Length: 217
Image (cartoon, rainbow, N blue to C red; front, side, top):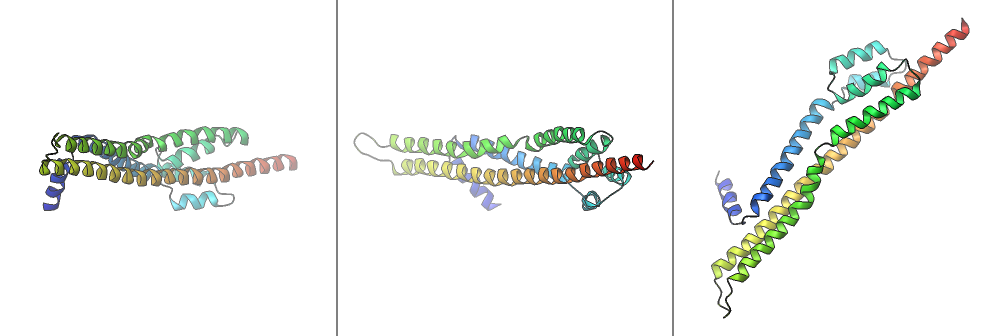
């Protein structure tokens, strides 16, 4: 509790620029928490479903059961469902529909990341602005005769340093969050594409078996 009060007192000496910096920090925190919930709830791929898709000649009924359990809001369920529902159509048609769905999922996963990108750029610039304002405040206290108010000058320098440090700290946290979420997005889409290829291969196999059956008849 004492440390929290001390931190608040330090921030109070950072000047007016602290408020927009805190707003940026709050925006970045909200986006990162929201994305963490999205990946936990809607981008989860159960191991049983992965193994099923990787199995040669799996049953479409088994896949349908797994997707029903996963729910329609799960991104993997949405993507696999598009492929499964169009499996009676030619493979090129299925790939086109799956590509469209993957683009929609990519947009959903990337929604809000621009906020983190903006915070990474804007926070250090706002900190630099606070540095300039703090130093200007210190210089104003230096009179024409060279008289200096030591306490006022120290306060101005402190304001400059606090704003700079806070801006850099916020930018670093937002940068780590942005890179982590971008990598998670890429891994999710790569896995989706890889398993989607397995499903399309299964469709081609079914078509091949059906053609061989007609020839035998």
